Length: 255
Image (cartoon, rainbow, N blue to C red; front, side, top):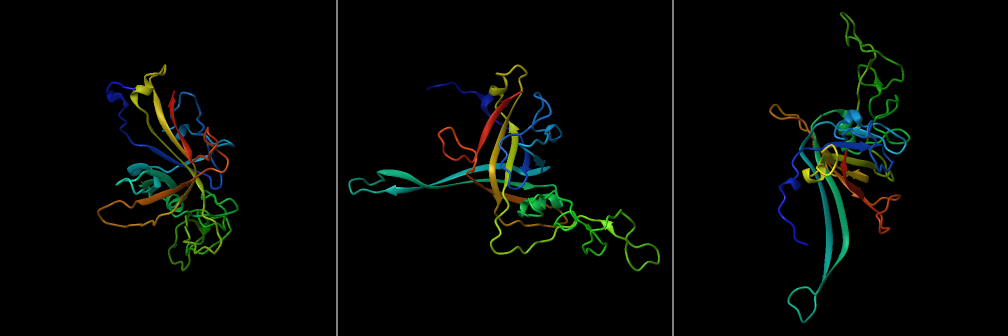
């Protein structure tokens, strides 16, 4: 079907990135208002069906990569292949987290804590965000920020500190699965079909595991960023219209 060229279908702009709670397959993003944009983290609200955490600034954009693998059938009568058939497929989402928080590093390395693996936990025995003595040792006692070493003191008062233990793990531990969502611009041609002239494109991936090496650079002339590459897997509870398991969905939302 022929159509004219339309520059309004060209998309330019950054995306806002979110991750969901470990072990929960989020299939939607909840907003405080029907006219709110999901690109504004303050408008995203938690619900029983979907809870998201904003990852902050990113660098070099967000890339959704769909990579199929095909095998070839060669026949004697042809120089080229007679048929191709798909044997496997992989889907990944890649970006670089520019806000060098321990929460972001925790997500990038696929960290897990507590019973549900939620990196936001604040329990004293968890790997992230625990209350610690000033020397870094664990403590379950509540603490308030204080001067680390008072005049003439030889030890420090207990203080609230953010700590990320680089856990050595154990055999048989399953990788941490999270949902991934990123929200960017939709084509202007889509926005013009709505009453307010606004639209956004929402990408939701149900099951994702951070799989690549994460380099943490500390440099005098460059920002510390956390590269993250999520390997996306088919859902166990969400399917495509034809009944096959779905990786996720892409929605052009008009609001």
